[in-house]
Picture 1 (spheres, rainbow, N blue to C red):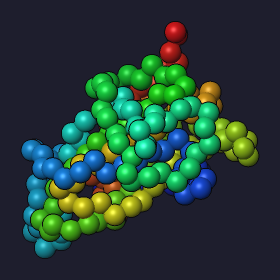
Picture 2 (spheres, helix red, strand yellow; picture 1 turned 90 degrees about the horizontal axis):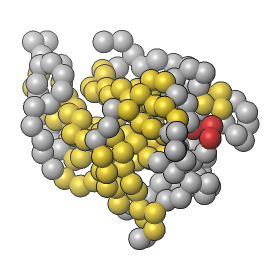
Picture 3 (cartoon, rainbow, N blue to C red; picture 1 turned 135 degrees about the vertical axis):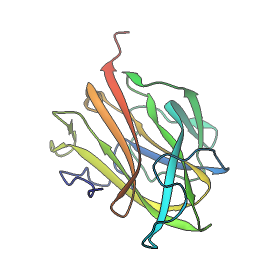
Length: 191
């Protein structure tokens, strides 16, 4: 497989790209990993892993007993935040304050952490950053993810500029191997 596409990447604000949310959800195993080859080694002895998307759609994140609210400044995301899957959805009827994304589990031969990259590709014309007026076409985050842990990666719609109708793609990568992909279709909420 090819490498991750490289275009404009949305910059960090206080340790987190605007809109992106991430949080570990705890330990847990899953069945039937996504991808080919299963877990193990290839014929050439190269290490392989897979990722299974176990939940996707709408989420709600709380921290210190309070729900995140639209319009608040972005800050470093706390791993202690509680993430709750609200509804499975492929189509996102977007409105300010909504959050959507994926939860996945890594399946690997070795029980250790791996450097995982999550890429969110935005539909054209991209997302305009209200602070610097620059347009971004994707966002990339990296972190260590333990094999077997359920991990959430999502996008929080904090303002009008975050509502871009079209196809949103969430990808999970290890080095230059795409482990999982989920496509969402966003449209502005009519209500």
